[in-house]
Length: 266
Image (cartoon, rainbow, N blue to C red):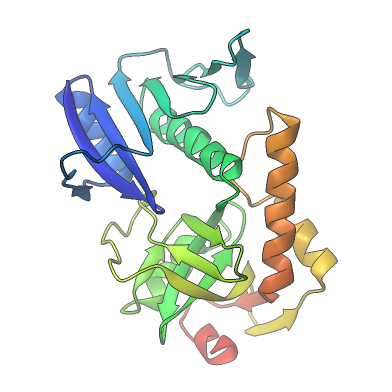
């Protein structure tokens, strides 16, 4: 068993790899921005990861969720199996392939954020401009990675999945996301205050228009990465999403496949 420590969104996580193949999959999925653990420091969470489980996901079978009399949790799909203590602090993830590993990691991590009232994981890219973060959200194929590509050389904090911290003091901060697809280079200077949220739509036009809080809530909620298993967690995700749209302006953005949209939003 090989152990590495990684800081993800402000939480110190101890990762244990069953073998080198498991470690290689994790490096590809969330990078290798490991940190040195100081003597006596305990992790916020511990996760053991092992390959060789299950089979390819058929995109039809639902995720199974079980809880025993002690509160211990099992989450299972064809391509991953996640077992954790009731408080999620100690967990074991077995996976089949990249998709199983990524889904299992996001399932576990997004539930930690909800349990801690910390924030949300949102399907989006996120770009830094003049010390502020701009979040671009949409369905698969909407253009999140395209936005990231066209925004270079601006720093990219996420190209697919953003980590959004919603603080009790009113601030909303973006943390550098390890859940990346194409743009693996980390942004070490965060967290960065969030300036605006843009729900993107490819178009022949370049224009933005503001959305009401109710429109924003309805449109943004289904972009949140979360599996609804327990009512208390679902309620907290709704509360966090409402707090987000109350604090940060949300726009619909029509854009072309060029960087001229920055003229419209900056």
